Structure formats: C-alpha cells, structure tokens
Image (cartoon, rainbow, N blue to C red; front, top):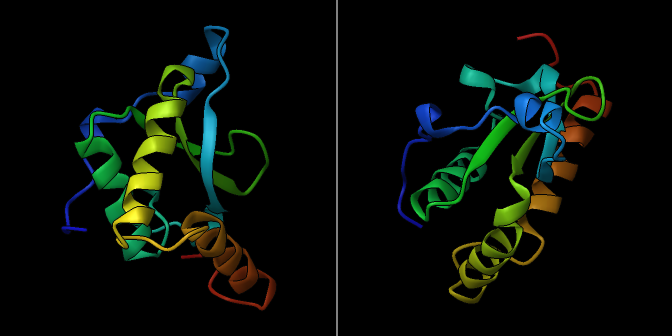
Length: 121
C-alpha cells in the first residue's frame, strides 16, 4: 500500500449523519485517550489504510465517542459498506493488509491502555 495522507477535508460528520436518521457503520475502533494529531490512532499502517479507503472514493469519518465513551471509530455511510468490504478484501488478497488487520490493530490499541499505556497525550 502506498503511503498517503488522510484527507481531513473529505471526512464526513458522523454525528450529523446519525442525527439525520442513519447509523454510521463502524469498521475500526480505538481508545480516544490514545488519539494523536487530528484524532488519528497512533498506528501509521491504520492511518495509511484510512487514506487508501478515501483514495478509493469511500466516504469515511473519524467518529469520537460515537457509540461508547473513550472510543473513537472509523466509520462509513450505509451506502458504502459493500464498497468498503470489497476494498478490504482486495487489499487482503493483494497482501497489502493481513486478514483481520483492523480487528487485530484495534485489539492491540485497547490492550495498550489496559496494560497502562499512554492515555493522556
């Protein structure tokens, strides 16, 4: 996967989407307390994946405390779920990401907090 920057100007407002009667579909979660610049997780590979998802024209959001307190999510609109699944499957097939990449990275970040990792930066 080619490195790329997340386009913050392209992120949709998940709270507004929810207020309009739709529920954002979350595909990655991490402790808000670990968030770095612009609310991103402290994982360059996950950030590159978010940029790749955007590059493919899939609307995404960084949704802070969207479902649970101290949890930030990457989310997409309902209409983009299948395109997102197809993109992730393609990246797995190409060897760009490993199977269950997002779940494993999410688990790692939550474990970091549980083990006393950085929580207030």
